[in-house]
Length: 245
Image (cartoon, rainbow, N blue to C red; front, side):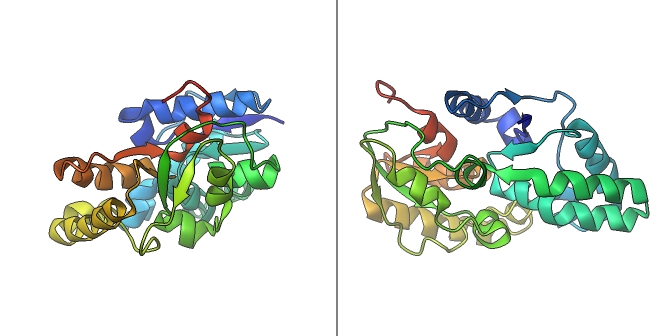
């Protein structure tokens, strides 16, 4: 199986350790993963803001960069959701039948990390060890657009030493929402503050999620309140082995 990593813009620019964790994890499971260097933004910010025509070159670049792979894996429900649902809209609007056909090939083969682990590889115990109390935030796109359901929890429950505690009002949005956080900053911060408060109520040491953008938002609020709670991407927890902190 030819597998490629779609690292995402946020991880590439701000959280490179997340992408490295995905590679370590997949290689430990016997998957030889490539990193196509031609990859850029998937185009989601443009589509979400209504600039579908401006997203056409990015969608075209995506299908070219990941052409021929059996699976494209990304540590982001948000970006996976964009590829699987928004790329078709952009391609059809472009009127280019070649782009429509290419998107029809690549989109269904793009998986959020937990989907790939559970549905494609058929594993929930990835051999991880993480002796900490953890709470999990299901991000909006992974929950509602992709429907990853309990896949992340099943993976976390199989991690040695990990104690998973429920997050109150877990399915509520954290308030980030990409450009929403810029256009509606006060509302975004208020939503994030609610999420951070619920995280503190759990007594967890670590907040885990599948999107670095949401972790960046909530993590900033947790840091400002000096909560002592750190945030980690799910990939980093699943890549951890005995001896890691």
